[in-house]
Image 1 (tube, one colour):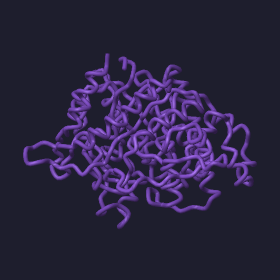
Image 2 (tube, one colour):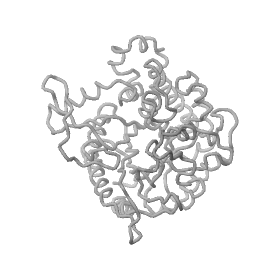
Image 3 (cartoon, one colour):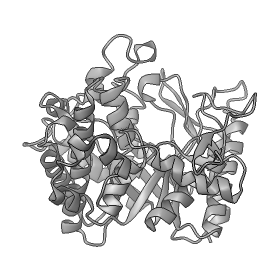
Image 4 (tube, helix red, strand yellow):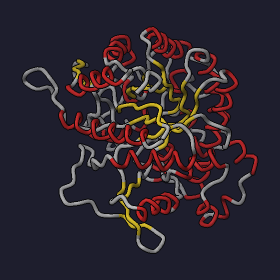
Length: 443
């Protein structure tokens, strides 16, 4: 890999920052949701998390020592706009400016995500994504960020995993804000999110025409259980069969094609036929890349009738601490499929493994499973690149163990172990492996 390839690691604001009501920060939906009994494992919350807000300088030294040339992090919207709109909290804005300063001083490229799930609670009370004014609120938020960072940050992601934002937050209700709304409201939330994305892209480009802007997707990563022409052809059928708020194409087709997947119009004509064509024109505002978060996949095969079928995994298949399968072919095929469909550069913005890590008696954190996992998946990323997929970066999730949403502190994804009682940082064996891997691969 050349020096232009981004080798990095990722975090998200609510998962690491803590300081949930310090220095003028407003409440987020996760600040409120995590306090509801029974919503989070052992009733954990992110009030302190990894205390990154107070420890960011030493944590950025850990990032520098990792040899990465990029760091993906998110901005807490209510930290800089406590009410979501209106008065700016300068202390919050200065916090992110300082992070960017330190990263640039260390020759690390900042990769900023604007929305990684912590909506200002005050905007939630106004309806959140179901309110048609949401895109204007998000546009104002983007203006605030760009006024501070416009000439110093090149890479921006508007939204992280819209599938989780809408499906888990507004359908199943297992993530904040914990709603279970009707189908029409779900589709409206998807549409408002996409309008918000597009307006944000336009704001970013108005401040910095050279900025690289995209959206980060996730969702079912189909891959052929056996690699043959029939099964590869069936991939398209598998992806196109998904058209709900948790699918991949319902978010990416409108951005790249200016139209929702065909199945949407067939199944919900009463909603989609009423969409203003100007909305779709706005949503298809050009972007520079597509971000992909990937951890596991869905093995499929041709059904022999121009369709597909899901193949049961073999007995005793390997899986992580989150019960996710270890199946590295998925990262190759989702990257290849989405690149061939949209012909846009790709960044693997998250990939990693939850592992049951602890500090051993010798003082180290030995995580050979994570090292093996990263080798497997990075190997498939490299294969995709050799096969012509324009992948320009890879980010391990995550820099450090953190608050893993509904799982609280029961899942450890980090390259760095966190003792939540003392906040002691202990780099794991995988940290040193990734450090040396990058050193040997950046030419």
